[in-house]
Image (cartoon, rainbow, N blue to C red):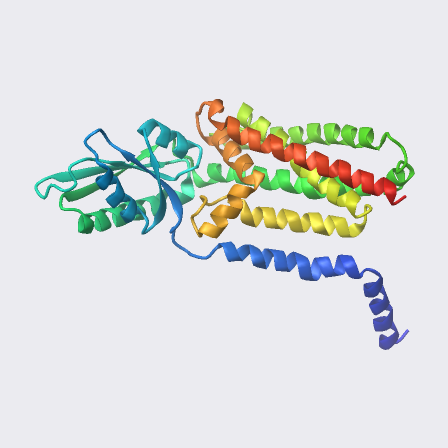
Length: 355
């Protein structure tokens, strides 16, 4: 067979598989490229920052001036109490807490600002120092009093390797739930074709979610054993971690299966799920703090349940915290799970009607 004939044969193959090929060579790389749009800056400019009065001597005018100074590098958010601001720091709602003293209009006084940062957010170590220096310079130019901003770190100080464990775990959970499980289900598509008109279709999928969910637990346990062997101080077996992993698996797996059955268990569905996984990695702030690069990325991340899963998982592994601080995050994940399961049921209804 000559080259022309071989090229013609390949062209026919491409035409027959046009949808998955377009997904692979157009949609998937485009999604990764679009993911870079959220990285608009290389220095933090939109990081959420808590601003709180140090005591009753701090006036609203003092707070207003400090908020203006903070806007140079972050997004100021006012809190009533330091304790509430530190809780927000622990929950990664903010990444700096600035205590504002009173007497900022007194030219003979020294205004001592305390800036709190969480040691557990390793990528933010150096930026927090830069932000404190910027705050010092900006407020010194704005205020009559001499300004002295001092950075205080709270929490334990994990290594970069330890910090990466929850990020890597979330990567694994996303790929396992969105790509591997639907691919495994698709390999049994002939069985599901016979079950199209059978009411046991939901029961079969429920059994798969249970079994593969338990196997995911084995994978998480393996991560815990390996990190323990490496000597990492990471609480992989924390209740926060298992709760986050369980709910993440439900909403991600249900989403992946909904796509699979909505597309009649076609190969294209796997590429779509892989694309969703890529967008999730790019947009959920799995590694850097929300707002580190842009307000756009912060907005997108806060819309995704995977962001709350990651924060909860990271806190469970790296911090000694009260689990009740994250009840609303678990609420977001639970709502996402219910919505994803509803979408899965709708896709099964469509799958049956297409029989």
